[in-house]
Amino acid sequence: MWNWDYTLLILPQILEALKLTVSATFVAFAVALVVGLILTLARRSDFKPLSLFASGFIEFVRSTPLLVQLYFIFYVLPEHGLSLSPFIAGVIGLGLHYSTYLSEVYRGGIESIPPGQWEAAKALNFTPLETWRKIILPQSIPPIIPVLGNYLITMFKETPVLSAITLVEIMQTAKMLGSHSFRYLEAFTIVGVLFLVLSYSSSLMVRRLEVRLNLR
Image 1: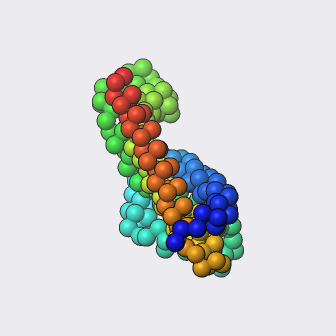
Image 2 (image 1 turned 90 degrees about the vertical axis):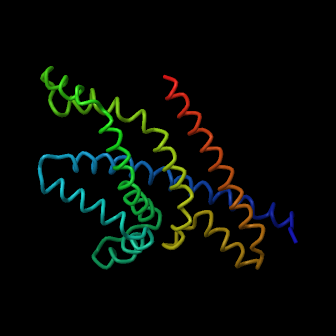
Image 3 (image 1 turned 30 degrees about the horizontal axis):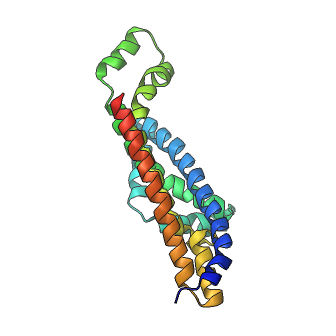
């Protein structure tokens, strides 16, 4: 049966772990945003080795499980002199994994720009950097913001996998509380409700943002 006294006792610990979960999500998303854009630009490069490397990296990461990538970063790299904390290894692994998906989102936004925009930039003698900074990116990124928001929500729901590399996020905290008291009902229910509330509210925000962007 549900025990409210026990629920109130463990709630502060779960909420504290939620802060770490949210922090890991946003840091990993920042990594994914930056690396995803770099991969997109590299893939479009006229320098063939760079383009092939970016394409190969994207396909490799997307074709292998996130858990395997996390294990490699956290357990294999220390054997070669690079030891990372669970948090750093987690956000790097999660960020790199989703950067390959965000790169496809960026690519879709960039390819939606009419060819005339590129030609106009060339006619105005813009450098490639100026073309990207002043013309292409300002037009291609706003329409894809809702899609990026959906990936942020997906990353948030994916964070429990970080418990596999000993990061004590919200799910790992619930498991530890359950193993200490042999009561799992309250801990896992609280975690499920928190994921539901935060994911659903974020999804509503993304939908409203999408409507606003479509009305402009």
